[in-house]
Image: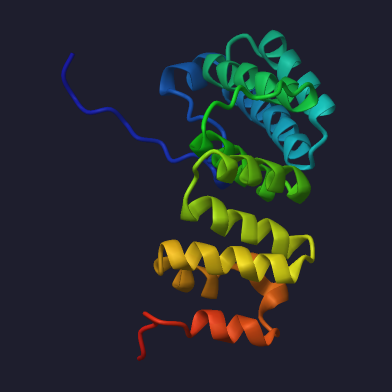
Length: 194
């Protein structure tokens, strides 16, 4: 078959949802698609509000309610699985300092600072380098342990001076910026002048 395919731009509210092919959108009819999209968005809103049980229920019901919306149905099933994992998290199988640091970053982003700190400490006990020191400093700063955060950041900078410029712009260190040690650590050897 030759010829060009018509490209349809999705409405602004649909852009977060998977794009439907022209065939599935026209086969189901516009009103069915619009209603399906609204229901899908309700699930997304519940997910973003961290109401994972409601979001899961909406996503699980979606494929049965809209069997003609194949692509949205697939996306709903995937999101239902994500919700289920949020509701019943399994302990990750972490095996090395890199994985402990990666999981620690996820915990930092979830504001689970003490748990993140435990993973960074474990990574450091098993040979992790400057990244673990830097991330440990972030966690310590967030929980108000400023002296320890400054020490950990100093260790990270000693191992890789590039951590100095990273720290200068990192919101995790907001609580340290008024401390005299902060200025000293950022203006240490290797700092470039502009």
